Structure formats: C-alpha cells, structure tokens
Image 1: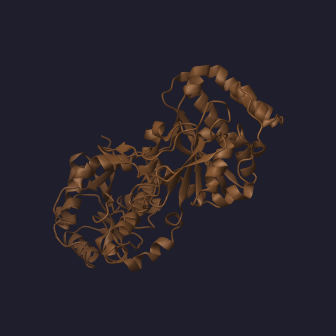
Image 2: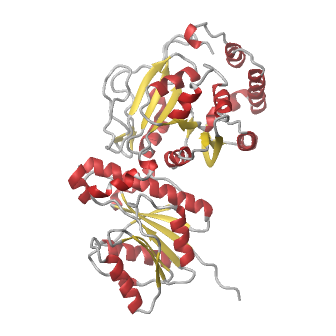
Image 3: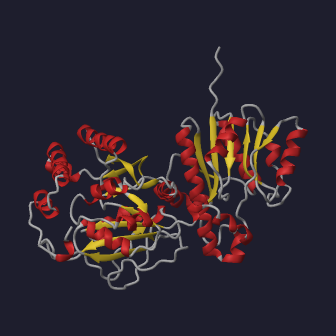
Amino acid sequence: MSPLPVKEALIVFMRYPEAGQVKSRLAASVGFSEAAGIYEKLLRRTLGVVTDFITGRPHVQAYLFFTPPGRRVETEGKFPGPWQFQPQEGKHLGERMGRADLWARDRGFTRVVLVGTDVPALEVKDLEDAFDTLNCVDAVFGPASDGGFYLIGLRRSFPPLFSPSEWGVAEVLGRSETMLVAAGRTAFRLRTLGDVDRAEDLSLLGMERLFQDRLTVVIPTVSSPATLKELLCRLQVQTWPGDEIIMVCAEDGMDGTGPGPSLQRGEGSFPRNGGETCGETAGEENTLPGEVDLRSGVTPLRCIRAPRGRGLQMNAGVAAARGNLLFFLHDDSLPPAGFAYSIRKTCGDPQVSVGCFRLAFSPSNRALDAVAAWANFRSRFLKIPYGDQGLFCSKAVFEILGGFRFPFLMEDLDFVKRAGRLGKVAVLPQRITTSPRRYLEKGVLRASFQNHALMFLHLLGVDNRKLYSAYYGAVFPVREDCAP
C-alpha cells in the first residue's frame, strides 16, 4: 500500500492594520498612525512572499489567521490572494498559535508552518527551507534577533509548546527548543532575521528597497469618477501606505462630445464595507478627493485635468506624480490581487525596463479567450504588450524615454518598443481583467482585425490623427499641444 500523500499548510498570523491596535511598542515612538502604516507595509510584503511561494508550490494550502475576528469583511477586502481566511482564537499568542495548529491537524494537514508578518527580510527560500527541513526533523524555527522566532513548523502536533502565556520575552526560542528536546523531539534553526518592534528596528526597513518605493497609479479617463467606484475602491484598499492614485480626466470639448467630468465638491467619496468611505474630499478645484493622510489606511486619490488623448493624459499624470514607480491603468480594467507588491518587486530588477500583466476578459467567452491567449503569447514571446495589460515602470525609465510620444493611439506600443531597447519587458503571470465591451459592440473578429490593422499602419508611420479618425470615425481637432 502506497503511503498517504503529505498535506502541507502554511498559516500566516496577522492583525488588521488599524491605528492604535498594532505595534504598540513602536507606536510609543512614532505614533499610532505611523506604526499602523509600517505594519501594513510589512504585512503586504510578507503576503507577497507567500504568494510567490504558493505559485512555486501549489500543493501547499495557505491560510490567513487574522485578528480581530470582527474585521473579517475588511480583511478579506483589503488582502485578497491565494489563501483562505480564518479568525484567530485564544487569549494569548501561544494559545492562538496552538489552536491554529490543531485546526490544521483536524483537516488532515501533517506538516504545518506558521509565520509572522513583522520581518522585513523574509524570502521565499525561508519558507521552502522550512517545509523541506520538516522531512527530517520534528520542528523547525526561524529565529528572530530579539530571542523569539518569526516562523515555527511542526511535523507532529505538540500542544505543550504553546501553553506558556508569556511570548514577548527574549527566552521564547530557547524555551521552545528546551521543551521539544525534553520530549525527545528534534529541532532545527533556519537563518536569523530581525523583526520590527521598536524604533531602533526601523533601520531594517532601509535595507529593503520595497519599503522605500512609492507607487503612483495613473488612470486616464473620459468618465466621471463616480462611475468608477469598483476600480477606485479596489485600488484604494489594496495599494500600500504612501502610494497614490491620480485620475487624469479629459478636458472638455476636444472631440465635440461636451465637457469632461465635473469635479465638484463631494464627488468621488465612495462607500465601502458597509458605510466606510474610500476617500475624503477636500473640495479644492480640480482635486477629487483631496489629500488623505498617507498613514490612514486609505490611499490618496487626486483628479487632474489634461487635454483629451490617452498619451497626453498619462504624461500629465506623471508630471503630477510623487511616486518613483508608475502604473498606467485603463479605467475599464481591474488589477490582480497583490499588484502593488508585484510591481515593486519587478521594478527592483535592474534588467527590467517595463512590465505588464497577462490579459483576461471579464465576462468572457471562447472567442475572447482566444483574443486574450494571443495577446499573452504576443506579450511573452514578441514582447509587444498593449496598454490594457497594465504597463508599469520606474519614473526614471519614463523620464529617460521622454514619456509617451503619441497622444491618441499606439502610445503604448511605441513606449514599450523604446523601453525594450533599455532592458527587458517583463510579463507577469498574474492576470489583469479588462472589459470586453468594445469587442462585444464591434464584434470580436472585427475589433481584433481593426487593432492589428492600426498596429500595422502605425509601424508604417501613418500619422496618429489619421489613426484616430480611422479608429473612432471622427476627425480630431488640430491642436499644437497634441502633435506626436
């Protein structure tokens, strides 16, 4: 009889990042809001590492054990990913970890690894080593520099290990190892990492580039912000503290369709999670909403005006951007979970000049699936992604390239082509979902043919305004600031 397959579970212990409820020792020095923002960055980076690990080991089931239990809706909305959510139970940390371990055992998992969320240097290899080590020892620890541990893995359950009530002391790791040895069990230590609990630990963040990056999401649009509720709410709760969102609304009258979206006071503050709002409005003209505290848990959203034309609007957005990383997002697309981590990680590769995500339509059908499959093939092997795949790059690369050169169409193709001369074009495996509305209105075959015809004409050097007229069936007014 063949042995039963080994079931492995990765449990992430996290707390909802609410000011005054996390990192109390750190907050004593930097304040509640700042401490909550720091913890959220640590949490998001950890979840990014977990996502990368699960991608490489899809048989491992991940769980987020969160607290407080009453913030389940907010936690699931703010931290989606390849995991399931479970509330923590127990009076102290040891009891909560013990109950989580038993919860996993009751569901047939034989190897269980628990990991914390306050270590800035955790890597995929640390998680791989933990599970691999459990092939030959009973327990594995990831030692923290303060005498505790950031990770514990057990091949067999050992409830006494979690019985002590004191866990914020320097003897935690040594005490745990002594209990295991006394019970005749073997243990192994992984590499030691520092965790962030006090102000003197903040220097660890300076050693990790992801914590220094600031992402600006640029959304060119001809729509009112009030019509983009789902997109804006998703962006505001899934970006990192310190990131920003800039909607670039088209100025009025350029194509004869009338004025652009109104930016009056109060517009753009959208309800979320049973009454909370995604932002605060400041009432400043051409700003929607206004500045929001970077540490409040809600990403600032600003709305500016620019001449109509996606290339022109995106250039204007970058001119107003404060971030060192740029993410260009169409207003009918939704980025994948964890996109802010993926962009940070990819832009940190010095060999990469520009990146994008794989494409998917929602809703979809077989014809649209074929269009997406071709787009993903073209992006991966020909390195020709389109803008609806969510282009991103560093601001430094954008400035070297001189921004988008074409105002109306093919600005994305031209940009990627030039960026490809500077470095690699990275196509990430996560899928960005976009609306199929234009394909469904025109017909999939017709829309696809039109896209490729325009690309061919663009490569032949046809003027951008002529392409606009062919695409939209309208003559664009001549403006000096719209010249390619």
